[in-house]
Structures are given as structure tokens and as C-alpha cells.
Image (tube, rainbow, N blue to C red; front, side, top):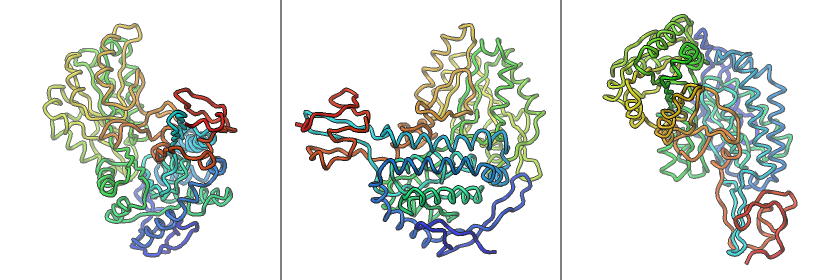
Length: 531
């Protein structure tokens, strides 16, 4: 069977060194679908690296208006091609076509691209700073090197390696992108890359600004991650995969921005349970099983008081989970990983209350609740924090607020942490103590909402302490902060005005917000303001 071409060096072309082929699989049936895609060899990766490296300086010198025009054109192409993209993503992932892909994920994908375009136009990511007395001027600037982006299986559009936030951020910072298509949805990746390539050509960016490779073996992926020609890596996926790439990147001094595993602890305070326990059980069920639980913000650890109200909550949750149909998972590997995780949690002392097994046809798993007493959890806290990626969660029953605080002291870093409190104020003091303890262990502290949703907002932090991410100071969602991951801080010391980047010159015709001598201003500086 012939394989699909690669997008390399500004053109769709046959692989130079194919090492095999694969097809997408319909996870609802387990049957292969669509055309064959190549497993790339070293010559294909080298061709992409060489082309991206050759294009890096030209892209860095491209006027911001043209970068913004590309991002806007690509966003419009995504909108215009919505029917095709949704159909492809649905076929390859079994995610709901209308309620998830068409109404949520595809609009989010286009919105991220447009927000990146706006951040480019207003220079928000550059943070120009001028010290006239010292004669210093600095800003964030392109890396002048390509960025390799590895997308996840769970967001075929909004986190796609050739369309998602990492992609948009790297391009907004004027760096070429080498995208790695995910094997769970290659046709979706291919279609997005076609739209992106067309927008590249239509807006006059260097042709190799966007490239895409399909599969390659682990050793070749690590070789790419450790190639000194790369400027940075953006990765969303498993802890094992992320840490392997990070080790290779670290050896070459390449920044690796990783979003990995997170169990997103949720604390239910006594007043909240007494006030609305049944409603919280329903809210928890919906969050845990949405998308078959395949979210990085899935509530994987729920801390519930060990009292009558807690018992009633657990009973209501068990009934809801028991009545639900098995959820469809993205791939056999996801199913196997979930089976192993659930078995391991039971091996370390958790009891399975409902679910806990796979089902057919295709790749399905029964919604699962496990439970352990806090004293049991505290005997093996590391082992019982294993992520069970899918429609599964571990309930930890606590006998006091002090036990909750002790548990928090043993938590790893997470993307989110949630605290539910009563609306009448009776839990407020406890909320303050729990929230204070939880705050340094999570990227986003949430009150009275399940963690599943991640708003596309400049104020959003979709990051957190290790091992949820590889760096606690950056976010994978939200412009302009997400863009700065793929930028370098450039400082100019007594450099002549005419030789400075436009946003650092005395004149400021675009009205860019700049910090001048400690104050944010948008006006021109007097000529020769630098000492």
C-alpha cells in the first residue's frame, strides 16, 4: 500500500527513508481505517531539521504583521473546513462529533490561533523594557532556531502538533515548527497541515515555516530532541515520554516545555457535602467520564470526609458510575495503560467500588471508582498517585481536616487543585487552610468547580509543578505567556537607535506598551534618550 507524503522543506513529498507504515484505527471498533502513513527514517528527520534551520533567520526577520496574517488565515481555514476536520477527528478518536469537536474543540482551535495573531500585532509577548539611564533595552525575541512540537492523543484539534497552542505560540514567536503527527489521528493531522501549508504560501512566510512528520521510532525521536539545531521542544503526553525527551534535550541544552501527568486532587469539605452532596456526585461523574476521562485535567483523586454525608456522596457516585456505559478510549495502548494503573492501585491497597475492567467492542473501559482510607493512602502516597488515564478516579476518605492537610503534604505537583465549600460560609476557614496548603502544589487553584475545563484566556495557567509539567513558570494555554516559552530574552547595551528592533526604538508609531524607566508607556521617547 502506498503511503501518504510528508510535509518537508515547503512541499508534500514522498518519504526519503521509510521504515514501515501504519494506519489509523477506529477506537469504537478496533478496525484500521483510512490510508497508510509512513514511519520515517533518519533521512526524513534530517531533511526537516535542515530546512527548518535554513528558514529560521528569514522567519525571525519576517514582519509581525505577516505572521499575524498567517495565523488569522489559518484560523479562518480551520473554520471553513470545520465539517471535514470534525468528521476526520471523530472517525479517528470516537470523540463526540457535535458536542465536543464541532461546538468546543474546533472553535477553540481557531480562537487560539486568532489570540496568537493579536498578541503578535500588539507585541504583548515581547515585553519591551527600556532603561534610559543605563542605556539598556531588552525584549523577548525569536530563538532563530526551529521548535519541535509533539502533540497528544486526547485533543486532535486544539492541542494538535500542527494547530494547537504550542504550534501557535512557536509561530507567533517567529520560529519554524517541526510537528510530529500523533499516530492516533494521522488523517486529522494531515488535513490541518494541508490548511497550514496553504496559509504559509498565501501569506508569504518561508515555505519551511511549517513541516510535519508522521511516526518514527523512539531512538530517532530522542536523537531529534537532542539535536543542537533545535531551539526548544513543546510536548504534551505521558510522563515517561516527556522525561525521555527532556533527558535528551537537557544533554544538548535545549529547553523542553512538557505537559505530562496530573491527578488533579479535589477536596470536598463537610459543609459542601451536607449542603449539596447529591449534586456534587453528579458533577463529579460528568467531569470524570467526559471524553471517557481522557483529559489531563480529569479529577483523578477525590478527597471525601469519612462520615455519613461522605458515605451518601460515595453511594450516589457509585450508582451513577455503575449505570454508565463503558467509555471508548483512543487506542489499545491507552486501554492497556488504564488496566495496568487500576490493577496497580488495587495492589497498593485501594478497593474497586465499581468498574475496573475493559469491555468491547473496540477499546472501551467501564467507568471506575476506587477507594482507600487516608491512613492507607499515607502508607504508599507515591504509588497511589499513579495516573489512571481514562474514566477512573480514586476516592480517599479522611477523618479530619488535619488528615486532609497531612495528605496534601504528600501530594506531587499537579495542573489543578480544587476545593468545594458550602455557600453559607461554614467552610470558609477550612477552605483557607486547605487552599493555602494546596497552592504551591498546583498550577491552578479552583473553587467549587470540577477541573476539566481549561479556558482560553490570557489569565489561564495550564501548567504546574513537576511532574505535571517540566517547568512551573510557564503555561501551555493563554497568550501571551504561552508564546514566551519559545522566545529568547535579548538585551541591547548602548546600541544605536537605527540598529534596534522596531519596538525598542525611540519612536513608537505603533503605540506598543513599553516599560520605560519603570513606567509603562506607549508614547515616543526623546531622540537620544539613552545615556
